[in-house]
Length: 252
Image (cartoon, rainbow, N blue to C red):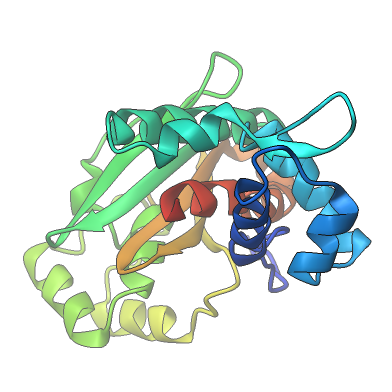
């Protein structure tokens, strides 16, 4: 099965969103969208969807007079007390929305201390999570999550990981040749979703996009039953466009 992918980019820039939030935060009594545009140098075509996203995520609220003020989500994340739980809650809300938007189970993963960690997941009866029949920590070579995370490491770190985890054949499509896998990782464009076409599990296809926040290596991923493989490209692109709120939460 071959799927051609065009490069994609998050629909909203986290840097632009932070500039908007900083502008709103400086005006405790509220600030108009025209003033936000003037201070951030963002055009209406950029600012309008950004403000819509920030309202949806609870980072800003719109007062009765139409001006914008900081929202409860920003207040919670900006507090040092309970920040980790507030961040987890905010991310879960975002993942739940992404699950409903893309029509697939959605995962957030990080690469920490040389291992893959699935930190959060949003699934449902209609969008079930993939059956983890082999520990994801041992299946980086076969999963979209693993290949996305390995792709963000340098060459030596990739080789170190593969030296600690055997490239086991999980399905007939699994890449078990280390040289071939490293070559694929080297040539994978960072802006193109990584795909897993029944390499981890027969009957499941997956896609993953990188989430870069500071020095953290992470990714967002989705999984679909193979009968929905025709939706994989569209779902992956939508996941990528919806990644900005995740990046924003991690940056605050």
